[in-house]
Length: 259
Ligand SMILES: [Mg+2]
Image (cartoon, rainbow, N blue to C red; front, side, top):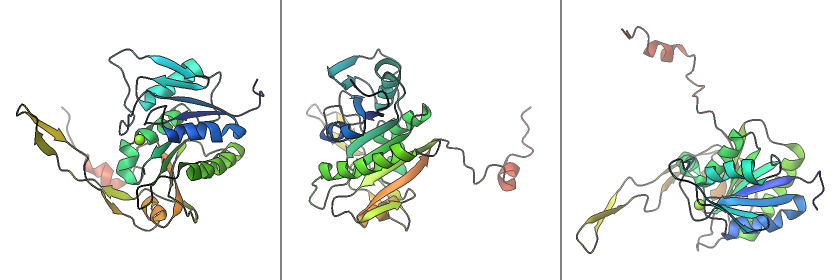
């Protein structure tokens, strides 16, 4: 029986409940609290914050502490909070994603980051964790889990600022330290690749090729390129504070007649 004061840690991802990254965290974070997985039943990468609204959802208890939902990462957070967990979790960790979520576009497209956003929308302290392979394409998930362990220890002790979601990217070892960063820019090809199927019909692929990164100083991209763990504080409020209430922006719509 868990101790009443034991922290409750919710784990989600966008790659499926069965994936190694989330399973390693399930075991490795156990000394820090009770860990529960509520994750999609299959790969749902790049699903962002999408919700399943037009068909019924199924919940499956895989084994003690591990649940799968045939929906999106954001769906899973609804299930975790309303159907599975005995109380609000002390922390939500989404990941570890096998691949980076770096730069503005990834932060928007990513189901890993979105699950953490969904936690934040429900006032749960939330972090997204992604891992970066080495030059040979090899991932070091046990190493990354040790980094996550240290971060979680600190977050459980100190808390996170209200309304802030963390986007954490962990490079392959050797890791030189931590950097607090802003989102950089990463450009994916806009190309839509067209092919023909055996019946002569066209089919298409988007999102192919290697993205180009602009790793300016202070960005998540720069930090991870230089072997630092990147921690970017994200906010769910998309309001552009930089122009809100500024006179050039106010003037832009001045005098428009809506008669
Ligand atoms: Mg993924």
